[in-house]
Length: 149
Image (tube, rainbow, N blue to C red; front, side, top):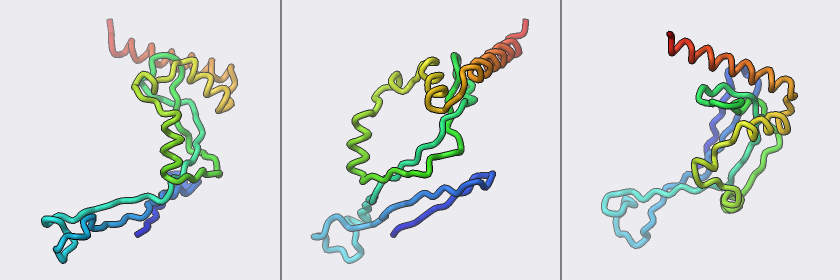
């Protein structure tokens, strides 16, 4: 059974499709004498995937409230039309090469996030400075409002 689910964003500017691949339910024990395809009354289920499609989205300045230093990152709505399609085995081998293993590995420093916004997303240094100053003002204002004298 192959199904496709379609979702349109609230602005209606693009259609995002997600493919669900080869959902098959099979009896793993062929020697089982039960006619209902079950083993001890339980149906054996198996799910398999045909491929893995990867879509690259733009990186934009985010609004995460827990970002204490620098600018937060977020994914934007725009994406690259060129999708990368891999077999599941190829995807897993590629992923294992660059996989991050600890929570510390997942965290980006303020300078790493700034480099991504400048070099990958193309924001100017003056825009990043202005936006970061606005974030600092907002954080200070929230701190003052939560801790009145």
